[in-house]
Image (cartoon, rainbow, N blue to C red; front, side, top):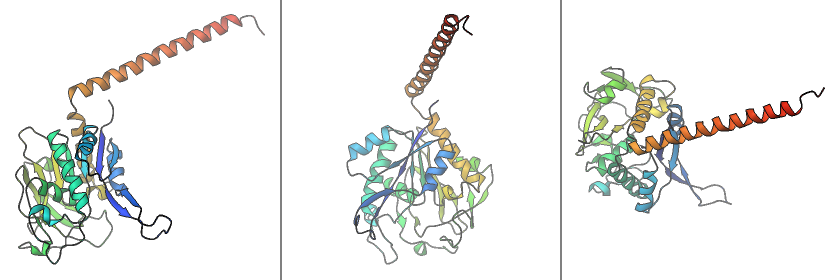
Length: 289
């Protein structure tokens, strides 16, 4: 069966040093996302920022699942707030693009794995809000922006035993994760449920509550950075890839099967022709030397 194609939402950087290409724009995503998807059995595809909603929908149609990657702060305009003092850099063009991605994926029932900023924009698109800085959250008291290697687990999270995430954690109620964020979920959106929290109550993971069973997992930490060091991180990506395969429409699966069956038959015929040609050559040159 063909491997699932997984789209990764990209950010954009601007050339500021090279005079020849000064001002050029580059679509980019951290390679750790690409690596984690590929190692888990998926085919990663980077999704550049687009403005055309119809083109974005066509992108999503080609995919088996979507990873919403990390990045800059979500513009508070999108959840009805004015910017507060501790808001950091925003990128509204990316917010617009990922809003369209999420809506298309939801409409087409494509599995979503949302990471860090990805979980935050997912919550906003579904109708929730954010703390523009964790310091605005009541009771916040642990360090959520670690200093150390990206793959190092720092603080713990408590996982809901009834969640899919709990099974990914090999049925452990407490896991340790890395942490690189200064914003967090405030008002939880309809269609999402909290499945993990930090010791200070900050939401660390959510899952979808859709009646149609569409797979949605959002995490505030970065499992892609921990992939080579953490069984928990690998389990998340591998489960996501499996879900993407299982969520494929039946007709796509059948077409894949027929395609491989036709490839096999064609190879069988080609091999048999080659065998016959070799036999003819032997017959023709019989008696030589």
